[in-house]
Structure formats: C-alpha cells, structure tokens
Length: 430
Image (cartoon, rainbow, N blue to C red; front, top):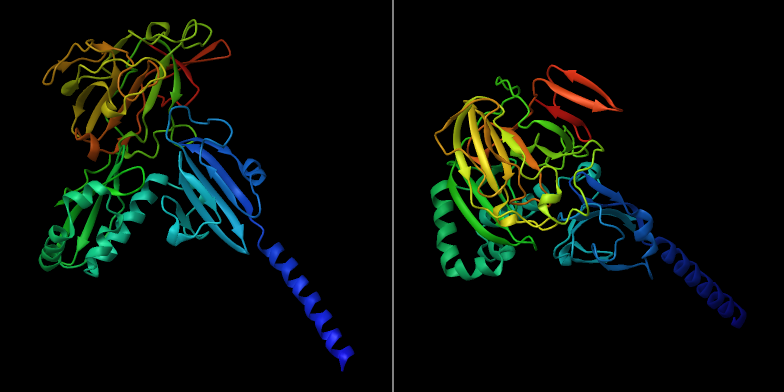
C-alpha cells in the first residue's frame, strides 16, 4: 500500500510538472505583427517588441521606448497583433500612453482591443475606429435608457457641463421624441478630433457630432438636424493648371495611404503637399532653420483655374521650421469656386501675402498669394486639394488632374497633357 501511495505521489508530481511546463508554453506572450507610425509612415517593430517581453509581459510607453520616429511631428499609433495563452488579440494604442500586455478589454483604458477578423490589420482606419467604438457604446446605453452608461465615456468637461440631472431628462426627451437609434452611418471625420455620425432613429435622422480628447473621452456632443452629404464628384470638369511656376517636389500625393498621408481625411483624400526644389532636388539651403532657407518660401502661388474666391483666411503667423500650429491648421488660405461642387483649397500661405478677398473673380495663373509656413505645417510648402463644397468639414475630396505637367526624371523631361502627380515626382509648372 505504501509503495502504491508513493507511486501515486510521484505520478502526481510529474503530472503537475508537465502541467506547469505546458502552461508556461501556452502562456508565452508572442508578438505576431506590429507596426508603429502615422498615416502612410508605418514601421515594422515586431522584433523590437519581442525583445521587450519579460516574464510574459510588456510594460512600455508607446513612442518613448520604440526606436526611431517614422512620422516626424505627427501623432503616431502602435498597432499590434499578439498571442497569449493561445488567444490572439489586436491592440491599437496612441503615442505617449503606457502599454501593458497582456491586456484585458475591461481595464484597457486608452487601448482599443479587437479579435482578429473584427478589423483588417493592414488597413486599420485608426480615427474611424476610435470614434465608432465610443459612439456605438453610447448609442447602446441611450437605447437602454442607461443614463450612467451614457456618461461612461464622458470626459470631465462633459460631466461638469452635462451632469446626470441634466442629461437624464435630455435623453429621455430624445427617445420619447425620436425613438431608439436603429442604425449609424459611417462617420464623416473632421480633424483633428471630431466626427459626425448620421444616426437613423425610429422617427427620423439626426447628425450626432462628437469631439474626443486624447484619451478617447467625449468632450463635445451635439444632436443636430441632419445635413445630407453633398454628392461626391468622381471626375472634375474644370481644366486645372499647376498652382505655381518652376520646379517642385511632390512630397505627398496619390491614391493610397502609402503615397499620401492625407488619404484617410475625406476632404483631403487626394490632396498634395508641394515643396519647391533647386537643381539638385534639395528643398532648402544651409541647415533649414529659417523659413527663408526654403526655396518654396515666398514663391508666387497661382490660381489653378478661373473662379470666384469664396473664403480667405489671413493673419496667421508663419511657423519656425519644425514647429506646427494645429490650432489654425489651414493657416493662411484661399478657397476658389470654379463651378458648382468644384472648389480649390490652397493652404499654408505666407502671412500678409494674400492678394484676393471673398467675392473676387480670378483667372487661371493669377497670383493669389505667396507660399508660406503657416498653420499645421512644419516647413514652407503648398497644400492643395480640390473638394466638392465650400464647407471644409463636410467636403469630400476630388482626384484632380493638371494640364499640362512636365515631369523631370534622371535629367530628362517628359510633358504629359493631363496628369495627377504622385509622391516623389519632380514636376514643373508654367
């Protein structure tokens, strides 16, 4: 009997050891894939993050402990798919926040966590996902008349301005008047931190406008009469010329996020950033510390076609290179209506350089101002895009072709009668 007991104890110990080893193998934290960056500037960081695993955990600050800066002066994001105890999850975390893995949905805080298949890892639209997650949670609480749940994602400023004794009767009245929310349409993003969701109620449609802070908390909320989306223009009718003379680099331009960091912003989907270059394709002289070092700064900016000036922003100071002004993102700007639903936007112009005013009629090639470094701009350049309405936050971008365009490559020139430039092109305007 004693031998049997000893054998059973030995077997139990061996089984326990096997279980422990098996659990350890199953419990290993593995990074399947990971990217860090912003817009089109994504960097593979799988090996870096795997090296940071200690005792089946990662505890780091996003950005500060990840090598390199793949998107200078832009807000960056880490997206990662990892496996822990045989379970895979996708995590999205903004720059500057603490990342602790393995993460749990209920205490994730700033993290966005998904099961593989819920989102397309390679084409995660970070901004849309942020807003959809918050607004969908709020809608669920509204429909359930869960007033405390509605406030779950409110930031302090919203909680102070819209406490329970005010929000409860408001949402009660909303539901009594309009019924439950049955469907949300995809949002229209209006950078930097707001989105508008057309919301279908049982008794009609309202627009839900939401502003988020950096922790994805609601700091602004409106239920507005629905404004129908202006029909997108698939092909413009206006004949456009390049809005400058001389030789310029297409820093951003094209139809994909890889070619164009504006791609995920609806009104700027086909926008361009143009930088003037010298005969060595350099954008500045010396160290580029001064605006005057840049070949674009002070260059004439021209109307790309005949039209009427609809909007002018002036008086915004030019930034010191490397500094950006997100509070007046467009900087000094001129908007020109060429025809219904075809409006040019020319932004980041030099302070006090604009030569037109709203209501002025302009001709193609007319000087409207000079290239500057105002607004959300880190160095002197021209931002140009074509959109379908003068309401900047409601607009949809239009892919535009210029006529003609001369392309310089390997010391040879080729003139195309109609062309939409892409990132990396060196082009000449007349």
